[in-house]
Length: 189
Image (tube, rainbow, N blue to C red; front, side, top):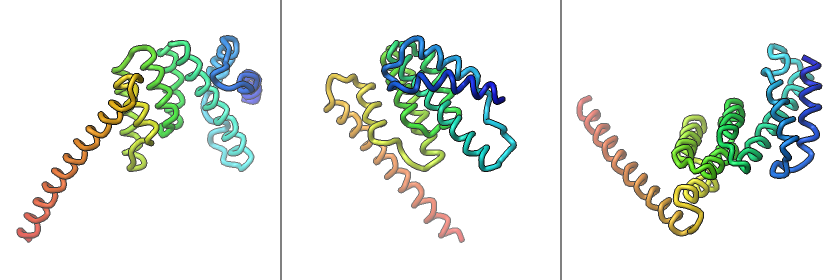
């Protein structure tokens, strides 16, 4: 395990010295090799403080490497690699909206509107299920721009407003149904 950790760090460290959008093909290849070494949590059953700190440090490096690879391959238009590395990151941190946004952007660049839609829905659903909240405004805004093209911001905002108004009407309709059901139950008992 120590050798894998040393090899992992040796491959990752030089690549993380530059910003993710400056990653060269050679550094990306190093990160891909490093990611392939990751076999799960460091000394998984152990909960000693030093192990937890080291585990967190390595997992952070791993997630950063994945993020760099998603950004790099997104710029290259390699949406299959973006999906592969993005899915690895989301398997560990499904609430990372930045990863969801990187995936949506890469899919849009590859002309895969269906995958943009699916990724946004997945992001929205996991946030709703886990936190009871909607995506951040920047995630919603990105989705609206990608869905309607970057050419005009106002149509995107208009479409977003239309979607939200439709959702409000649906919530109002559901509130009426719930009120009627409660009233009926009160009358029964």
